[in-house]
Image 1 (cartoon, rainbow, N blue to C red):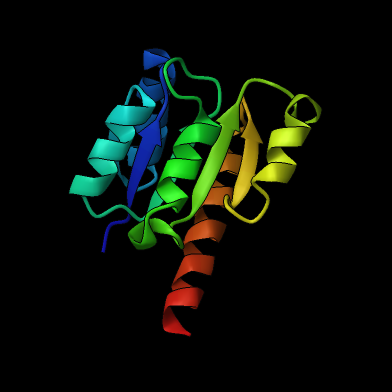
Image 2 (cartoon, helix red, strand yellow):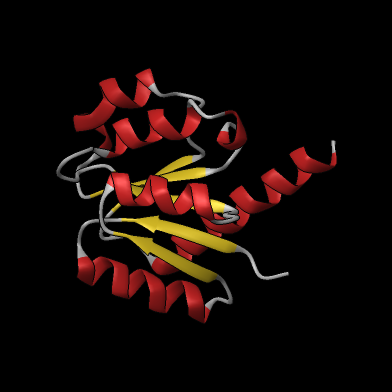
Length: 131
């Protein structure tokens, strides 16, 4: 069964690139250009993983992550955080949200590495579901 990934990212160019990369790897992609839109799409669709940009207007990625994880239906949903900042600049938020997201990827990312992280997150989720 094809895995469905929701990409929440306010940069339309990054969404286009992500869609091309992910669909090329065999995933189905849903896209949202803001946190509220992403939450709405998530609630209306079966999603296997979320790619979530941290730096967005209106609601930043940490606020969106808090909203996702506050809902029982999405507590175990794997989320990969995306940001153009280096991790040390976000260390406080990373520590505050430790355990709520699967991994953290800095843009520009290496396609092979991001795809590997996605595969690992989906496999870990399958293992949890089987337990």
